[in-house]
Length: 288
Image 1 (cartoon, one colour):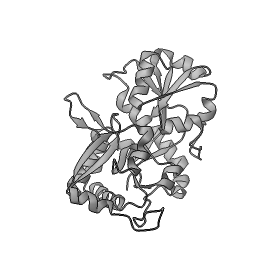
Image 2 (image 1 turned 120 degrees about the vertical axis):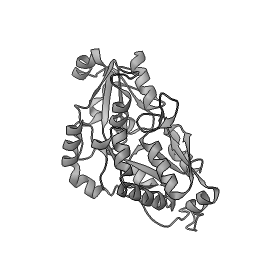
Image 3 (image 1 turned 45 degrees about the horizontal axis):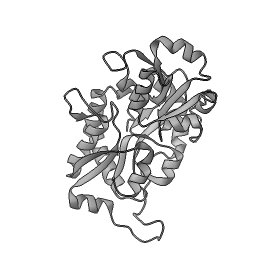
């Protein structure tokens, strides 16, 4: 995996420098009227808590064997909360409705291994990227040779609203980091959406789907020896492109700057590196 990520990073260095994947900053204004909107940070600091929209998947946000809510994003968000002097509340959402939840102010941000895309850059205020990601094919180990030989007529599943879905349906355009177009690769497959990446893996385990297309970060966190999916394997031979995880805020929100400044401090004091090591994500961590 480390070698695979390194190859992608080299091939995409120029693309990333031009993509503008960093923070979307600006005044906190109501775009429909041009009038100043209320400050998200003032509202949150006044009530002393912030609501984070997320779904459950390891190693980002999940319950461990002791039923404790943990994960890289969970721990990092809580560390940010300590820096800002506020409590972090985690709200499980339907990933396909994340933008609606955000803009209706049911949540204050989307912090759950969300990939930066052109559409999200246009419609949200995004933090700087903090983890690299790819799309991984997950399947039963005893069917890997068969599936990798030809996916025509097979059933592939992905989380509804995810980057995997966007890639295989062609709603997320391929870029210069892509060697194999997922839309072309799965053109003759049958696509079925799942409510989450975890449920996509369950479909494969149950035999109701032949393979799942999920974030590699999620795949390596949930699949393998001593997991519920020990009979399944991860295949990243097809380079469907490099993605970057970011945190999403409402367009024009002043909360992005506050959270990003706190994360910069956590990079500087070694907290981010320690969390990446704890969750085996050091190879995928975006260094500053």
